[in-house]
Amino acid sequence: MQGVDMKRRDESGGGATSGPLHLPVLVAEVLDLLRAPAGRVLSGWLVDATVGLGGHAEAILREFPGLRILGQDQDPEALALAAQRLQGAGDRVVLRRGRFSQLPDTLDELGIERPVAMLLDLGASSLQFDDAARGFSLQADGPLDMRMDPTRERTAADVVNTWDESDLADLFYYEGDERESRRIARAIVESRARAPFRRTLALAELVERTLRRGPRGASPGRIHPATRVFQALRRAVNEEGEELLAALGCAEERLAEGGRLLAISFHSGEDRCVKRYLAEGAREGRWDLLTRKPVRAGRDEVRANRRARSASLRAAARTRGEAAGGAA
Image 1 (cartoon, helix red, strand yellow):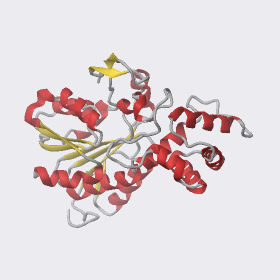
Image 2 (cartoon, rainbow, N blue to C red; image 1 turned 90 degrees about the vertical axis):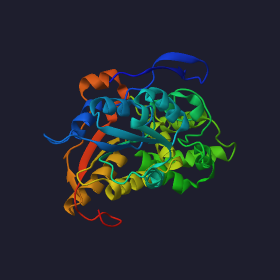
Image 3 (spheres, rainbow, N blue to C red; image 1 turned 60 degrees about the horizontal axis):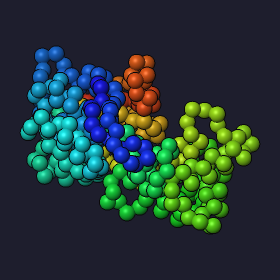
């Protein structure tokens, strides 16, 4: 599906430019996996737990007239833009601000007992990456922040400047798949003793210099040498691993029988987490796997949207088995 024309900031954080702000990934595949078996009409509540700018929600509303959507997001800026995009849907859409771990409370508040589907679109959004003031981007200088939810207290600067060397090394290795994690952590600790890190490009340049001095030099690959470090910091700041487990648990506890869970991930660790959770649940009779292997974007979509190249979609349907926290 094409992006929606809205005003957006340029990468310097200055004036606005017009153009497609958001291209949701794997839209056709999401719609295919949501379609009910022949002879049944999909109706009820669908939870878009990361509504973002509303791209998936817009397509779902158009395709399934019997669905209503609870769109939740922890980013107030994204939520405001989603409200603009979806305003024509009227009472078919309810938007709420919150993290995955707060989703059960939102469902209770709205009296939504058994949603028929839940969609998780994990990781950071185009809006967050493209605004240098948010601190996610390697392309323009900004504060070392990386909070999706601006009410969180801990920023990326707090992690970089206060965690000890071994914790930083573990973070970069396990959450960023960075093989040179120990050397990078050592360089950060040595540098911050002279001056704390406050800006994104200062950290990115240190990582790049550190890797260039190594035995193999900086990687000649397509990604920036600091990409994995930034990914790990973002995941730590936003507690993405813990929040994902909370979302999976909520889906297992709250989905209707036959309700479908769809999870789009952009990080190998996230995909492994979803895969293992659903595989274990399938062995114990709680989930019926709809995808044995991750669904990936086709060549045309990747050509139109580079961020789709790392997207992996997994799906499963809730069965009668016992939920992790009690009866189904």
